[in-house]
Image 1 (tube, rainbow, N blue to C red):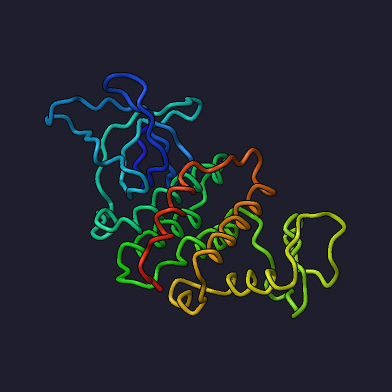
Image 2: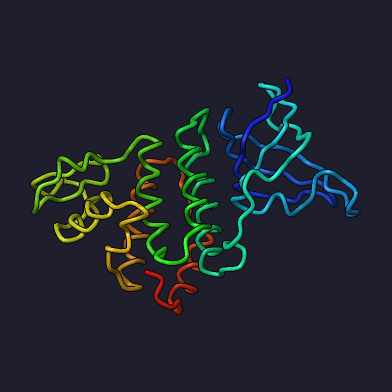
Length: 247
């Protein structure tokens, strides 16, 4: 069946001279892997630049439900980025989020709200002229809403602990070790209430930001089976250590 859908590029794997496997998050089918042939000449329809990580595409698929690898008939840019490719800090966030989303949505089926959230977030980042240093933190926290383990912020009271294993705030420290102390719980619940327009009010230094990234990855690791170490994380941390003020 011919399927037309929006798609976001999450991973590109070269496995022969001209063939690639591309992992996509699609609007209508969730996660889809496609096999494509990209000729070295410029005459072919499918060009390598379409498949940069986190690109927003419109694709035509020869879609077969029982096949592991689908075939791509045509592709178009749904929204070409203007600032992300030119900004090393935005690019570091983009590459990190591609790997993060790839692992956190591996079993995702049709979820148009999730797709819209990621698409609109990337458009926001591309259009931002500043105040984006907390973007990935807010993105990671809010993504959990769409895959099933966003905590109820209304349950929070001053002095509570955050139980990461059960995704709840509680007045007493849990009996297990997967929880945040009172101070960190307060900061996390504040982050949960932030959005892209207000996140610049959340003032952090480099060490604070790194700590929150590590907490959020631990949180995902508790709720997403086989969530691995992220190879792009040290690169992003190193770059942002020398970043000018962006918030």
